Image (spheres, rainbow, N blue to C red):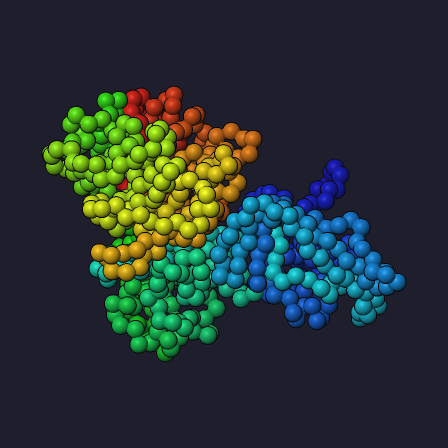
Length: 589
């Protein structure tokens, strides 16, 4: 309490330290309707166990019916309540209705999945009645919408993003790789279940992937697997070993399946606990060990690029040849020409995409009308174009190419008369057209494939604006006759009115360059689900034309700028010039 100065009201939803904790306070005797509504809204921002105190603002019937975990609605700011509640007819002394309003920016559903929204108006009502209480008449809420409604600052304080991991479908067991599925869980203790963050994450993992990712991934946990009923908390022991007691559904799992299940748990908890989990022991329903897996053993299932991936960079020099900056965590090696026709041949190229195994590269001609694929490890002649565009201007021709984690090459033709998204299986053969049902007239201006091969980031132009969407890649049929489509496009940076460049930066994060409505260019991180991490905004850099990030988040961020050439950004540092001359710098992929 201050000992001098004025006493000021504190808004529970003001931006501030994420360690601040709000404690719920029960309604006072004789509380006015305004105080009941304000107290209820503030109590929702607390860690109140099972929302017991929060429920004291409701009538007994409303308290029993209210489901706070049904949906979390995120508003730009804390919800406003109408200052003048509406009184209903002759019963104005016993009933009042308030309107809650605000700008809705996102929702989190019962699967903990985040769904960003273009800012829309939010309006809900709270109905209060004056009822008999133990100390006389008291106002309580008798009609309340299910779920929580929070301002953005409260949401970021109360929730944290966690990547669950599942296996990509359609790949052989030897090629099994984990795919990140981002969700939001409570930062400390979940008020409804009373479980800590580790237990929440494991429970969410066992429930299975979110609806958006479910068609392209699978869990190795048998259907119906959950934690044993008596488990409330999961805590690593002093040797950083986490024991996970499972129910009977998992009792019969084989060793190979069990190890894959344990790897899902290890990678899900990798960035969650302050003390890193070094080993997971899955237990049967009777407490006996099912299998044990160490973090080093789990690397065989690591998400593509997350461990020991390529760290070289490639760019196009002033003469139109492709050069390589050898692997270096500092991004400061001496450039050298690649082998093959792109390094020293007569062809001059404008854009390059390098396969993740660094054996092949795809490059665009100077006028973007032809795509070539050639080796960058062996000498050879420039082959015939793999893809050509017939559009009139270079801005309507081919986009920069990108490779997925399965070794397939992707490129888009922006020809207004014949727009196409194309895929070359293994980087060779006849290009296959990929259907994108939900483009709705938008044109693909750029693309980047995730390392897991199940998601694609698209820059879509419509009505003079370019926005970022994430699509799910679905494959049907045998490998040689596979039909591929990109479905269920969702916003990834709804706060940016125009996005000019982007790149994947890890399993579920992208780095984007863009502008807010009426704003200036900025560089920031966004999650694949469209949410913005707390430390999302990066130091500014002028006139960025392209951005490149590696799957290994420890490698430097690289940018192609109009005035300063190619620049890099290391964690905790400022942008530094790497090359004055050169363009189109990329990491493999």
